[in-house]
Length: 338
Image (cartoon, rainbow, N blue to C red; front, side):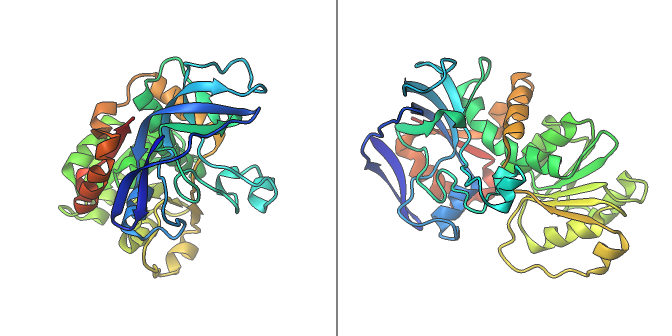
């Protein structure tokens, strides 16, 4: 079968791999749509510390069941469209003992620590599948990236009484914006790209700030009666946005970090103490996040065609990834169709 492979930093190919076999509790999937994500871009750039080469990427998946093992429940059937929960967990570490399987110490994510789903066929345990009678394959492939933002909003304990500001309107930030808006919060989107800020309004942002064009602090103060947002969510991964999240959040506020800063971040520690801040990390997503995003997308209000701004066949995946590397601000989401 054909598979898209990142052979080494900056180099990709379409290779041949053996077709997978399934055990009694497994499902054989025909992969139909795969989203390329920021993790895949980092792998292509050679800056993903979790990856060994060569690596087949792909964990944002819309698939059709090809065959099922003998122990698979009858609610799964050949020809049914499904999406995949791409993380696994050990069940033994301190995170798993607290039911926080998303940050398992031994987590292996498809396409990152192990080969992913940008292949014609993929075998997974049936417990990793979610179904929906309403979602298209493209929407199914959007569920996983949106869950990452949803999980961050859950970590921040966002309610309808909150003002929530989100740094970054890429695919992950869009998920956080949508999740916060769905909870009734007043949502503020922050980016340096007006087109992405336009998209943020379509998913529920009440206010947008181009931080390259206006003073961020003054604008946030004016939107919050001088208090600052109740929750700041960082989905960029830059030292300056890491610091700004702490500097701009209100007293007794919550800061949630999704992005990975590529460099060390220095803080003035007085903000943590004087404001008694809750500073939280957010990684991956839980089963409840997947179910919440599926229900959200089933309403049919999410601007899928605006978020997925390029769709390519498998043969063009390498070209699309290379073009994204050259001009990252031009891309929100690339889908590869097999």
